Amino acid sequence: MGQVRAKTGLEFEVLVRSREGFERYIKAPRIKWSGTGKNNMERLLSVNKNPNKFKPIMSESKFIKADARDKNGVLYEIKKYNISDLNTYKLYSEPIIKVAPTRSKWGKGDPYYDAFESCVEYNKFIYKITKTRWWRKYNKTILKNIYTSNSGIFSKDGFIPYTDLKFKWVINKGEYGPIFDGYNRLTIIFKIKDKPLLERIKEKIITLLQIKK
Image 1: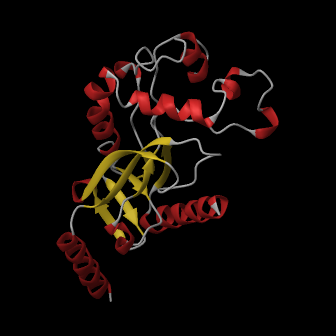
Image 2: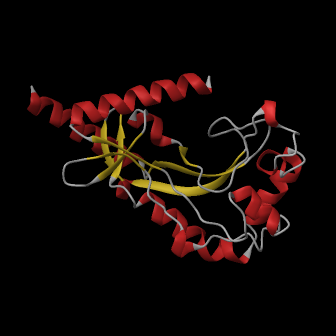
């Protein structure tokens, strides 16, 4: 099911870029973590998987999230949702370190795949991150840097500026998108701010469609 959604999502991105005259511009947040090593897992192991020491280096992190760019350089995120779907929270981004091991490589001694003994250990680590001093200090900044890095979201019904959306952090246990074998993910979710706004957006879209006719 996850693969089907991913495929249809990519097809929708191509459709929107073609229809709106956007260029393909794919960017995902990349947080630089403390510690030493060639990748995030090695850095994590270098601080003994201590969530208090495994901190983001804000000045070296990149928070841009985008799927498209227009001729003026304005960035857009594209999500295959109807506006009516956005009365409830939906998955937006998973920028914090996550684990999704490849089964054929699991248990082979590769630190990238074998950093955690099980989802139980990993989930405890993710929970402890949300209790650290650095999380209290930076989580709102990371959140805002990501969702303001683009102008907003193109949905199936049209464009929604980020100012009309609400974003927050959650630990996704499968409610907001598939997770690998019980490995919970520290995730950004989003929704329309309020119901009256939802109705106003629908009215704008109807008006625009009538004008085009």
